[in-house]
Length: 185
Length: 367
Image (cartoon, rainbow over all chains, first blue to last red; front, side):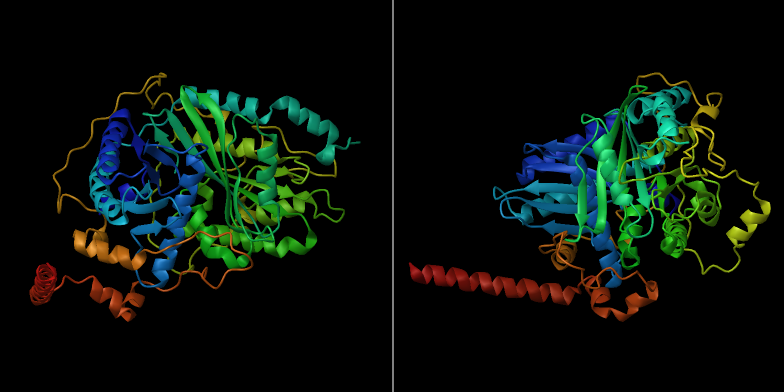
């Protein structure tokens, strides 16, 4: 039970080996089901990995956030209906469709497919894939927690924030001009 | 929960703008979208009503670039502020790494600010989180109003935790970037922390908690006003952190943590434990044989659309209520999860066999 809690809500850190194994599993899924692409998304909306052909202008970050939000919304609906949650969602489009499968109560497998294949095929292999990926996530959850990113990361992050958001110079400018750009005093 | 991916060399954090309706959360995000360098920001995705009121959330990814060899990203969300949308507000809070609370400086919105603040605390509790444990920045927005509540007064009403506070006029962009920068530095600085979230059980009704405002008023040191006066300004970076979350520059845990090079760190050896139950556990009710899974999926499937539907939605976003005892009322759902009896299986097989025979007979007759 403690392991389930850790898998559900602990921080999972992914290493190259984890992603390689997941990618292999996803590649097999795409090959067998003839789907277009597969994304593995953390329930909180972070993209873990993606495989397959992607259409141009494919905003996978926004899609990941929407997938996670969509799934979370239906989870609340399920609770109202007396279900724990819906483990599979399917959105049907004119050309492309997407199936979402819950993985180990921690991640979501999003499989996009078109009329080259059928929902049944996708669902069948997605369920198998979910089981295999769940094993890998469990292994990741059982590792010792990461001992922080280190002081170097923190120091560089501070500098980078100043570069992106503007540093002391911009604050001095605001101090002179005040909110609204109007000079103070 | 910050996602760290050494394979793709990415660190991703979730930041949520919270506050009452029409306080300026979406405006903040729009300003960030406008001001941030084009190559670092992604699309601003808004799920809103036709009246441009946030229905589910706004979302925008923002990259900080490469930090110590890791591509560092912020995922910025806003929540719907209207009281009606509490269920969706709670959803967006899941996995949050840092919160910017946007308060409305209008005198008529003081009560709404307080209610939203309490709502934030309540929703975090559902995830086993305490507001004191989450990086938090308070933004006092709409400072350009002629009758704006004095900043120190507004801050005293809300800021029981002594969070860094910034004045802002979001419609013009003033104060927007400093607010975000402060929170981002707190969130990224926290990555040195080994804490990972441990959800607590759903809390019992609040009975024994001390009144936070009373305790804060009695015990907290007299915090200097965040800002004062019409031309006053957000305090410089690094001097405002009066709460327990330490400013980025002050922390150094390198004595405990191994030195990090820019290459992937050595992985801790995985703990190998013998499985206690079935080798695969996808969660109790979901670890079902394929036939049942398809059945469940068929029940739950359908053309679901995440809508930017016009007008107010139907009463779908009611707060979740009730507990496990409600499930006993839904015998249909309960029954469908039971394994079919052998007799039923045989009957089904028998029927299928008859159907196949009939089909074959008709085909042969047709020849």
